[in-house]
Length: 257
Image 1 (cartoon, rainbow, N blue to C red):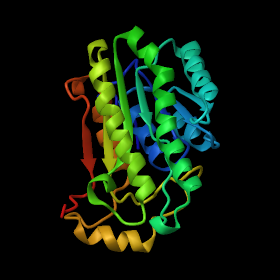
Image 2 (cartoon, helix red, strand yellow):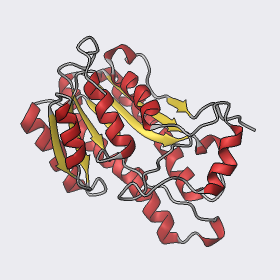
Image 3 (cartoon, rainbow, N blue to C red):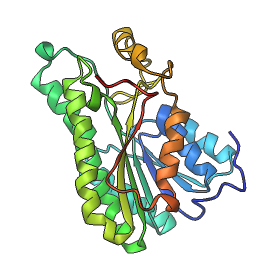
Image 4 (tube, rainbow, N blue to C red):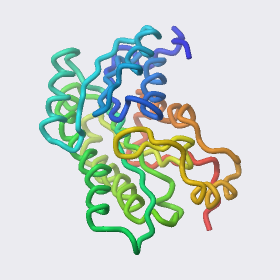
């Protein structure tokens, strides 16, 4: 991937991508950098490879180690970005946990852990960056959800509940922040080739989920990170400013039954 001088719709903008060390998050960083954005890699994991890759593309990059479920960490993240660049324009919230478990075997601890990582982290990250966006009169909040919220995919009760919560969050938030030039949208992702669980990219989705979903897609392949990154980049652009409180579905055309 190379930076193209004619693709600079985010020139001068600062974008925070949480969960950005590898996988989908890294693809989001690269695509936003193509549009000219300064990139903040926010992750609890080591992000040195992503930072080096972005710097090799000519992007301005800051890496911040963050546990997005901790208020002090997300607040420190926002403070470090403001100190370095004086603005926060875009938040792509990619932190999330994916885990399969039949409901009858699902423990209350698993339930709480899923909601904490997938929803508490979103709440705290937005809380931290919103004042800077209001001050700047511009903001793009983009939260990653899942098309499983429309499908009722088995073995994912806790996951689907948390991802539907993401949609409810952006829909309600959008009605409060639109007047400040800020939009809040979700991207519901389909059968991504690489899933990102709690901490590290742990591999491909299970064969049971593949067998359940893939035959129902009109495009018979799993989504790649770059597919999603293009939608994320569009929602980050000033040109998308009329789109607010929406869930944009990217899943290869899964049939709904």
